[in-house]
Image 1 (cartoon, rainbow, N blue to C red):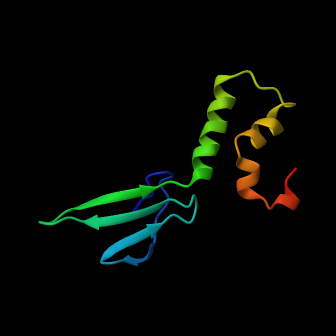
Image 2: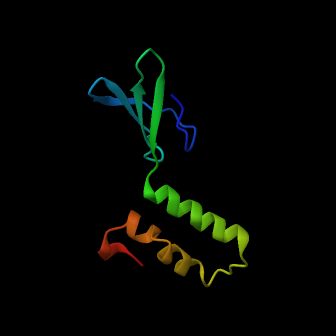
Image 3: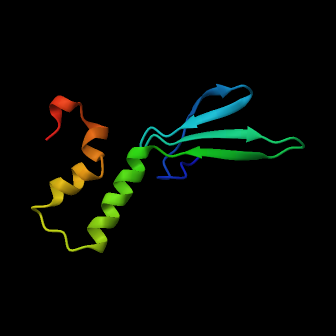
Length: 91
């Protein structure tokens, strides 16, 4: 199946009860495909917080006049630095 977040191919991770669970190796989105009574299915999509933070960061870059000096501040205030690095490796 295609990832609803980034369109990458999502392999089957396993099953939760009888429902298949897919994960995107690119962005980390998880999809649980819930089988409905009477046929069909419903996807429960779980987008990682890091993806949301990066989207906010990208939106800030496109909607405001940001110069190179404040970019590190945006990176930190959006919580991206803490989500991708251990405390001792954060700048």
